[in-house]
Image 1 (tube, one colour):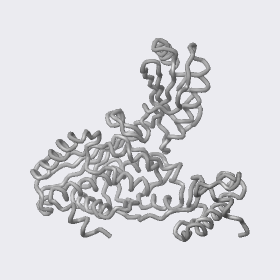
Image 2 (cartoon, helix red, strand yellow):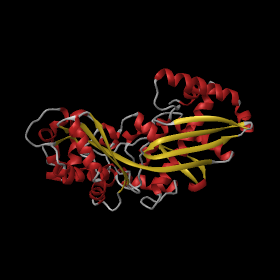
Image 3 (tube, one colour):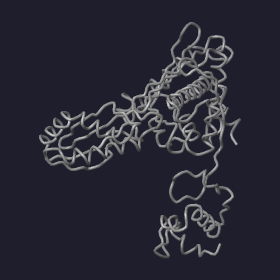
Image 4 (cartoon, one colour):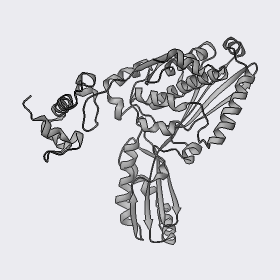
Length: 401
């Protein structure tokens, strides 16, 4: 290529050689050519080998300043036996760099396969977006709130006009002195839906709240922390967001005996780890490592990785029954979709086949959430039994790279 790469790409190390900005590179030369220019610059400037991140255009998605694609280890767990509404035998993908994690989930999957499988329940609670406005006074905020509550149907109509796939479940109005928080909750069908509900919120702000409210209001932020997007909060832990998932499996006495652990061992572990340890830490979620499985599954299925934060707010319970135990995991905020975002990447589309999910088909997002619930149960049960047997450090020492 006959490009003077250094002047055009100096922004990568913070030195501006001319007025050509990064976005202008892509507009001027096209994404594919601009990507190659950046790769050549890094090779020339830092001695990096583009062989490790070069990818064809179909594999890089819609992100900006595209350099290529980074390969990460991809593991598989299965077969996983899911019973009930989401009955299937399937395999679940995990993208992680952590040794032992896939092996641990596989161990849990094997136990539940040998026993009676995994029962999963999914509830679509709806995605949320909250905006915050400021009124002249607390009294003004009360008046505006009353006006909006009298016009909820109009707000719903405006929001739903932005997409045939968005259905408002609730509009909530909260006051904090002169601040007014408006929160939308919506069913966005098979999409995770953050972009959809953000656009819907913008519509009601611009076409109703900021133009038709009888008192002066100022928009402070289109996104208020009240929606708790990508942040841990007691609101999400208690009331949920996206999809609520509950997965349950039984470990019978004969299997516990083979594993060398007793019901009493597991009860004492839960009491000490969850009851005492979580209390001392002030934990919101009470679990062993939900976030491990959530992050690995989100990465493998094209989800927004930052929603691992909400995915970590789960609860794990162990309840004795006959000579065995029921293990239950509850995830109050699973943010998944089978269309949009990273789900469009061709390699991720391939992974949906092993999960027996057809992206975009009705109920496919619920099916995906159910698969995640089963995976979390497998990994959580495996770790708890390893802890009860004091095998955690030994496993990492044996399997570390």
